[in-house]
Length: 296
Ligand code: GLU
Image (cartoon, rainbow, N blue to C red; front, side, top):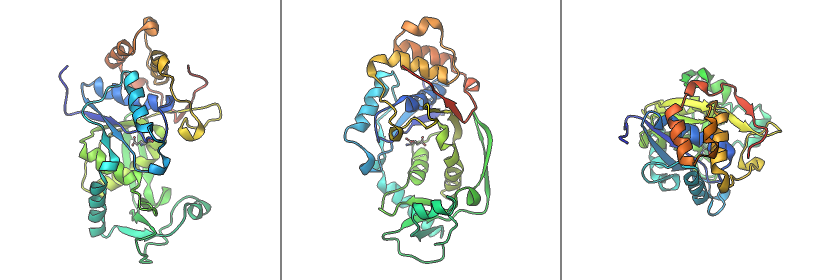
């Protein structure tokens, strides 16, 4: 199959546990969205926080994706190999006078309503032992989400200055994701709606770094009976690799696609071939959260 190299999507899991149904939904949606348009689908392992990565989790995710037929193009990019690029981006922002050191704890900010008010901006604190934040402007960021429609966020009111390097010296997700999406040439980001709220921050950061803004689309996040996002923290079960076809069909239905009954006995490759051909982004539910009662 000839590839359309103008369209590049990606799946970017954090290896904090095995692939579960929620991450399968996000991976499948991103895969279908670019393969339907004959684009390239990349895999990036967001392994920047060793303390939260059980040994073997990254490989386990890769094996689970393969078992579900979700084959990526090219080598996997490990963020742990990209520290120099993040340091360079920070240096650029520092030249722009955008960065400052902050000593506030997460608990302090939570107690103040969860929005950082910029109180350390002018204190001139040392970088060492403190978090590094990006000063945001008093602006509203607007974008169109290809599934959820027009979005806007006032950065200062909604989140405040963004942490780019944590107090423990680790680079933050918001910085690494922006640097790597641009470096990998990603044009189409399709991911879980739990990250919808991060998108305006990422666009603001792209603009500061002179990087292009990809097309964004957010699929509803699968939640459990308690309304919690399925994630490792909430003990979402690892997918059983002997039920891959069933899980894929379930993921397709969750995404509003209507797999033919004949696919019930099909292999993952047959299911994906059908789904690539019939992918309809308009059919993906718009609700921010959809309840997932059970899956097998
Ligand atoms: N690594 C992030 C996660 O697992 C996703 C990053 C992204 O898709 O932008 O939640």
